[in-house]
Length: 188
Ligand SMILES: C[S@@+](CC[C@H](N)C(=O)[O-])C[C@H]1O[C@@H](n2cnc3c(N)ncnc32)[C@H](O)[C@@H]1O
Image (cartoon, rainbow, N blue to C red; front, side, top):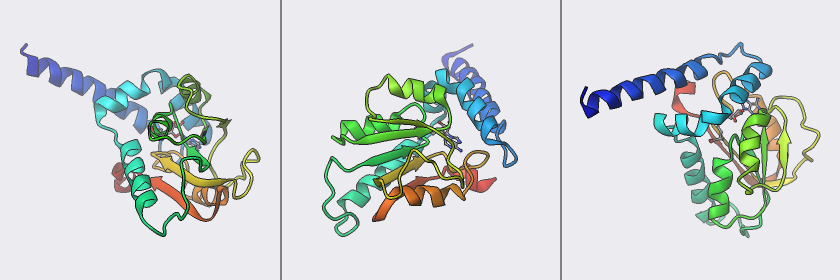
């Protein structure tokens, strides 16, 4: 088999592994289903999604940076603003934020196994293992954060849209709430 054939076989194998994980979650999945899926996937999540071309974290950071640069969207913003990465997973967004100089970032995720990988990166101050839903997360005070970022989490088969209300509760009035939903979630 030539190089291109080997690549195609690897790609197909990886894509079907990724699709299998994603297709395990449907709108009737429970929070526990999502937790178990990501707990089981944590070890290979970054490699699989990188190979698959997942860009939720990149799009989320692009939107965030654009907002930060726009006059009037976030007056007085500095690198010490308090940010919540909701559905932080293995901490890719935390790494990107810290590289840009942000110093005050917390992580929330339903999967402790995903958070365990994020913990090793030393980019977050606090870790909250809890589901985003319509239920109040008691560890988070109302208006505790300046910014909530949430990539690839309020999507098909995972956190329900009603979780947006809880994300809004976390953020100071007038501050920034950035959500990125992959297009496949809207398509299905
Ligand atoms: C596709 S990953 C995205 C991770 C990270 N935001 C990124 O872009 O790399 C989705 C994450 O959402 C988490 N998740 C799924 N349902 C959730 C829920 N109801 N509440 C909190 N986290 C959830 C999963 O455990 C997983 O870490």
